[in-house]
Length: 190
Image (cartoon, rainbow, N blue to C red; front, side, top):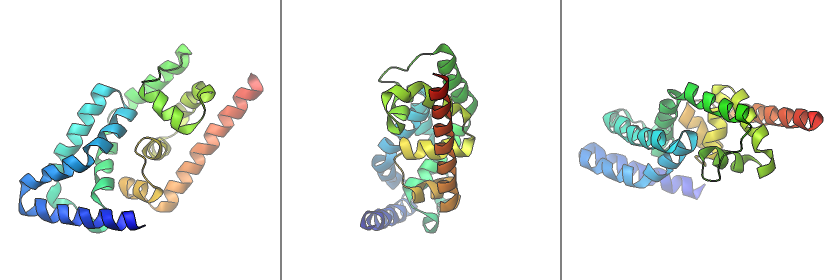
């Protein structure tokens, strides 16, 4: 809890600085780019992730005067922007997972899909988890990947997506159930 309070105080100072001087927004970039980059690259591929991360900060800079600290810190705000930008790539992302599943291949250890899957379960479950990712709805996939790739807390995910904490828990629970059902089905079929 102390880390959250410290982060909010630091964010409040950053906001005050960049509202006085737009050049101070570079401190937001310096502080949060790596996290947003890792999340975006994990959700997409390296090139698209780099583009999304850069665009996230362009959008944030353009909307800096509308930032409301009472709705959460800079980190959830930036992840919210990134998630919305990733949503534009949603069909491409789902097609990619489906293609991997159809091909029956396990992604390379350096690929973003491997990082997602490794965060969720042991290596032997990768094909089932990739298949399960394709079956999640947008909200469920956003929650799972914000937690797994963005390493956000449930509260930060709620602020990022603009939903209640209970909604995050509910979506995560449904996603876990879907993962488990698919794994159980695969075990019965296998």
